[in-house]
Picture 1 (cartoon, rainbow, N blue to C red):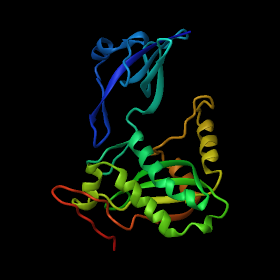
Picture 2: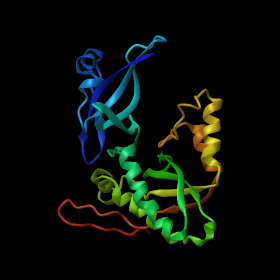
Picture 3: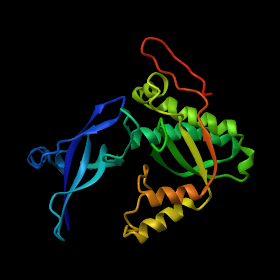
Picture 4: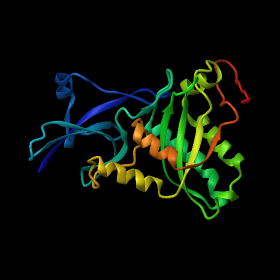
Length: 247
């Protein structure tokens, strides 16, 4: 029914997490590898040829070979290709964002709360622009979580991001404080319903980790119940540690 090939991708810069891959079709065809030739730890973009007529269709999913079972490779889904947040020279991909959000959300456990879903948005409507995270929570009493906890979550996300982002926050002042907007329960179900009305397949739908489509942003903003900003700048070390406090 389908034939799978794999296009190797590499991390262009470990700090930014940006992905570099060949762009010319001829170059891609030369570098495509078959299922039996994938290597442990290597990341690939999935390329599919189907019985229905797709020929070497680049799915856009980045996979990493995590191991082998009976000589058959096993894969972990890593991210969608070219899904990044960017305000200035910073580029944050889905993997780095996910790790940063996970680090921050751990602070909610003590309040018997957890992160249900999230997405992000590079808000450039003001100067400087800033990252916005939309969080839907599972919690018995939202009022039991002090605002300072969410402010610390903002700071933790920033601390977990790459040095280019932190330089933009601390030194260049080209990036504003990160913001977390907590949304009502059921918001991401509504987001899925909206995607389905736009032609998305329910079997292939994945919560977008970065949004740019204006109607989606409007939907998310209409469901915001509280908003918090990072109150400190993250550490950045060109030669020494630097801190700043927001006004």
